[in-house]
Length: 378
Image (tube, rainbow, N blue to C red):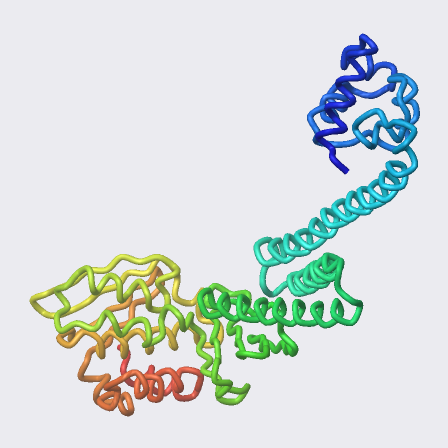
């Protein structure tokens, strides 16, 4: 069916009837843009107004669909051809409309996945529910787009599409966990205890320690080597205060103010605010915290923090001899000699693993903390 030929024919007979596009449109109860569209070959009149159009233009439907006036000799031949062309045109029009609808469904599903990954927090169950729902919707749209495929082939392609989409979601989620240290959206197991939540997923396990506190931190276990018994748990933010981070501040001299400031800022108690002073002559460091000591001593948090900070500073700054921790209530003084004398294995803290073994792992033992604290602090 030649739309351009039909459009030129409509324009020709319209002018023969001394009608403008606007006048013809008014007679048909449509817009003049629709008439202009026909005459430009960009569309055909709907079947519902085709007979009325032909009556106005004084032509037959056979003439209209042929794009010319048909003589009696060719009338039957053209009629049969036009019937076939009209059916084919209608099928293509419906197919095009359906294709557009299915494309919209597919992209709506993908949009739902995008929203699930950007709006909902990763530990929200809605994140995974909406992601999978979006994938199902997108898969449905994809299957429906396979218009010329057999049902068996459609089903197979749908399974492949869904599988690839699910694998991509898992890897995107996994990348987000590694980069941002957040719970995985697609956890098949979640367990909550007093101070920890465990998330198990296909590619890693995530441990959320000190949950809902200012010292909350995450451990992403890609090798699945940890369990509830051996996971490193300390009362501080391990991402910030752990040796993996503070080792970069190791320095030989206390006089390096910038380095010392960065180190203190990453150690426990810094979250309460502080100022510090350096005595380069006597190699002393004084840290004044903006809080009362007894106020933060639940479960011996103060003793654990001061013990951890002291050993970390003496280990990472080679020439500091004395540290004074001042609070609005009391002050605590510790020197390197007493730490070396009374703290077990201080001299063995020579790398990250031994630091964790001899300091981090001991910090949860209240008896050890109390005993050692009373020995080394004045």
